[in-house]
Amino acid sequence: MAKWINVSTAKHQLKLFDGNRLIKTYPIAVGKILTPSPPGTYTIINKQRNPGGPFGVLWMGLSKPHYGIHGTNNPASIGKNVSHGCIRMFNHDVLDLSSRVSIGTHVVIHK
Image (cartoon, rainbow, N blue to C red; front, side):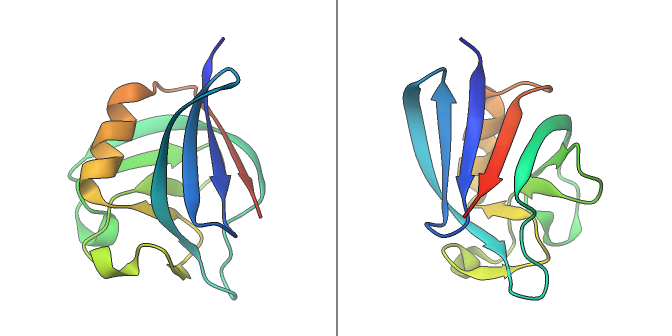
């Protein structure tokens, strides 16, 4: 089975699965009310280390333009609804996740 990512915006959790088997759960921050994280199924289309700005140590772009999974320069934001729709992770967590998934990995975002 292929690895895939399940993002729950209500629970502020990102879960990495291999088929039906849960590999790891990470705490996340998600979009705020005016700029919610977009529900749907996407794929990781690129990875960029040290993208600069508020994106922490790593950016993984999604197939929905301008959205991604990335680190943060504000770790206190994890667990909250604060982003412009992206999925924010602790820097050490986004590095760990990135090492476990490849470009083309499916990402499901839901409440």
